[in-house]
Image 1 (cartoon, rainbow, N blue to C red):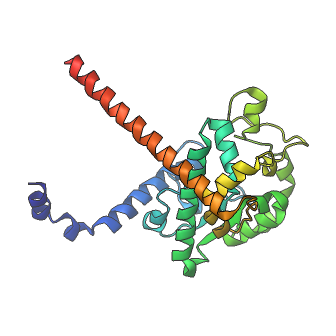
Image 2 (cartoon, helix red, strand yellow):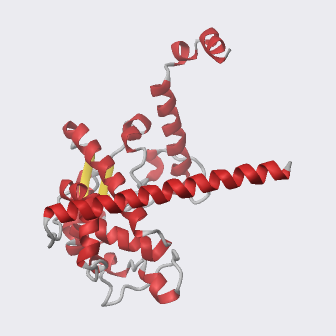
Image 3 (cartoon, helix red, strand yellow):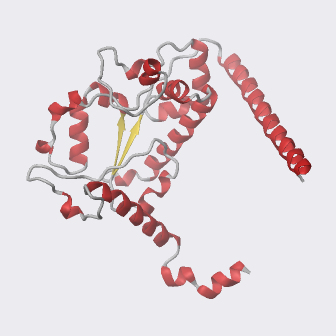
Length: 271
């Protein structure tokens, strides 16, 4: 019945189908986000973004996941994209410390996002003027050079950027906050001399490094990172991790089955 209605309405033939739908959705998102550029929340145009003679307001938004990345230019065909990648081991450590994720889930989440980024970069090699891939570690080690690269990529005047203000930005949303305050929060904190987000996985055991290599090692290398070499033989490494994968799969299947059984009896006796 629904197919017949769709055929009768001829929506795709009249309006343009899913590409146009995605573009309209992207335009709605842009209009919503652009309201942040106005103090009173009105929609403003790009030409209205200049608030003072030496200041330009730029619409910038971010997301911590690469889910849906392949639709980026379907939604925002005129936008420029910056892909910020980070050492997966450090990300895993932050996810476990800050948000209580299991090490296995964090490794697989990082791996899946890295796969999406690598696939996107490979697919759009001819669009290097529209997207830029940066390493978090490079920014931390040389903020000025990295920001100059970003500003030039975005075609923004580098002379208008206040590089001196970088030192007073502080830190927001770091897992260091949980170590200090017991909870992750998004309030600005002063950057202390011992703040070193690049070293969070330095305490990892050899066993944990080898497990990470098994789960996400290929994706790390695809993004240009070096792995810690395994110390066991390749055959033992493969056997040990294969057994662990099977155990995890059995455990998750068992949990899923038990949940289904629980819901079944719960619904049955509720009636």
